[in-house]
Image (cartoon, rainbow, N blue to C red):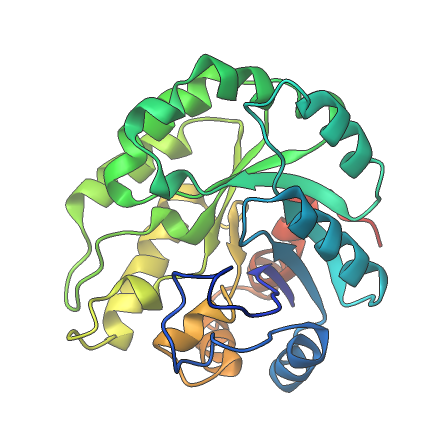
Length: 278
């Protein structure tokens, strides 16, 4: 199994103001914690994804990845709107495990998705053989489609099934409509089935049948060749008891599929989308 989405950090309240105090997130979550969690779940490879928008974190993730064969890829952050983006991309893409770039678009206004400076940066990623992770909320899907259409040569991967407005007992129709449009784009290489648990309101139960409904909808919309497993650990611990709780849930969701379909969702789609080296 390949976990295509997790984070690592040395915790500090000033550096991570979005992390609630007293939660499992409010502590160091580094390689020892990752190795313990993945070992218990039977996960054999991971992709570490940026959590802070500073190049120093990208450098730190690259260094941590060098310490362990478990981490097979890094999706970091570079200042795409900066005039120095080319130098940053040259530096980071030279590392064999640096496979993609992400910006926290979910925190930006719609206008940011269409900024010419952003698109100048995005247009440089294919030449460096890098992917782009799309992090957005359901409400941002329409403007995200415009972003995708402006970069037809750039392979993109949707994080957390575009963060639907999840409620127990139903699948959002607006989410379904938007995802069907995104799925029509050939440069959308995959979608991560991850991060869903934390999109339910704190006063709403995370019903297994609702999780299953979103999985089945995602599978129907994108097909087994573009759905990939991710955990969003340790963020998922805001609503789940453990890393393994989510990994076991996804294994159960794929149990009725063929062995080939299970293999590509749990492992091969992530390897292919990120062009991971053995």
